[in-house]
Image (tube, rainbow, N blue to C red):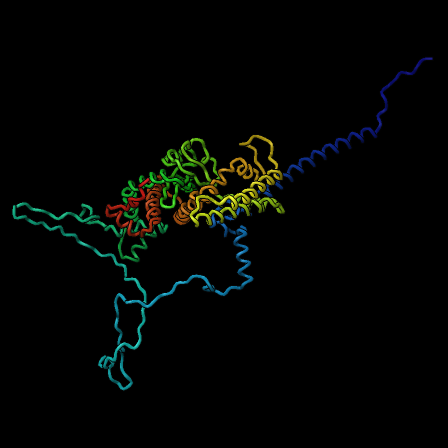
Length: 501
């Protein structure tokens, strides 16, 4: 008996069904994984958008002018002030206890007499009535109509007894031209454009409407060029004085200048007496070209921008990170990590140190007393350590790996603790860089009003005039007076005692 030949096993339909279901499950798993990746990406985009929308001048370096943009939440400080005002339901106008201003009765510059006019009920003309004296008096503060006048300067010639003839010299501010515009009107044009941020065309219209003088846009531009040229030596002196200062603040801001599509930066250096601005890029070379940081041997007060801490500035005595920026950054951390204690703890310690610095400076102390300083420094240090423990670092290359909010801030406060707390041991060092932020803020106002400036050279001329004006104002000078002197060829200079070491 022979065995039957073996054939292929019969296909079980259940096996095909199992394979089909396995393929379907694998496809669904891939689809689920893809959807999860999309959801994760959308969640990250949403978190980024919510974070961007929540940023304001109270928790970032954004300017206060951006707080009222549509959809943006105002800083907590403003919200709490509005809530308190709503609770108190203050009445409009001056509040009790707030300083006010009032006019006082003074000796008048001139007096105008007003007599009754018309006719009496008896029919007689009141112009013939007897004057019984002043019945009531009213004083009004007013300015005279500012009408431009045409002044002709005649230079007389005289002959001495010896026979020599002499012609009078041209007065200061009168060019060797038969027709010209005077220095005060030129100073007014510079004042309006640079100090009051009036665009050139509107400046021309304002001068015509108020002073009755017809000038051109080209005239206004020529005034700016002339003012920048006359102030050039003073501006160089200002930069030298800032370079020699013991403490100086540095800041930068974007400015639209030159061809469209290019972004420039205005760099500023400031002390309590001087201001200097220059145009460039946000680079070490631009900061060096200004000629201050390469030779500066004092304390640099700035935000956490890495270029201010670069070893290229080999002469600086130290850095002080702006605590206003740090407080805003910690406020951002408080919003990013609701319920976390360490952001508020760090803010409380820093604000306490700032108050202690002001108190020590008012008392004439060289440093914050140790018994006041050490507990606050201890609280700040532990807040930083707690934050580092709760916000883990994302692994990866340092320059290309995006970290969680606050991680780099905490590492900065840990690794550069002396750059954060330098002011506590020397009251001549400011704890904030508010002086610099106030210095660059008018440039943003100018940009909002006038827009892009077509030429970098024109922009630098405006910045030089701003350096001249700001420095004069810090010395208590009237802006129009110093601009008038500048147009007369007598530029104001800082007082002689400011040059002494």
